[in-house]
Length: 180
Image (cartoon, rainbow, N blue to C red):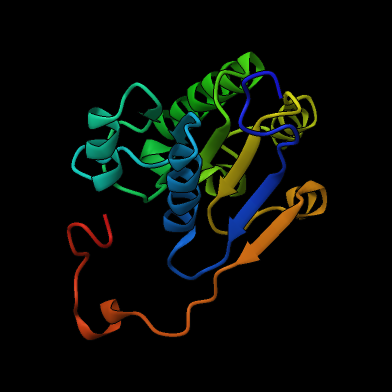
């Protein structure tokens, strides 16, 4: 393994309408960190300044990097902000390609990349090329709703989170430390 955590990194897709895609990816990050590995999380749509994973990254920056590219804390993709969202997602993909190619991280999480693909903010061809040319030891996780069939086909693991029940329907808003 020559100092690497993994000799064979695989590709996971966490998708679906249910909660827990980013949470599952961060759980995997915790395992990698527990074994002394390095993790990079690249958030394509999120720009929240007050979330638990960002606070964690600030405390453990020697092995856990989190980069956000959106300019605001809204997940909404509206017409009047489409060009800004597209530019941010393109920058996130450029950064992801550089990070993955360099191979310094054992796990790279491309958070909400499926959403960026669904809204055509980035090129599916570029994402597929990035996956296909990643260094052997790098594990990749792609999160977000509406993963395209092409990603589902090339991934090693695919998990679909289904929404069955959510407290939001009863007026419970997002809770610090649990939902963000």
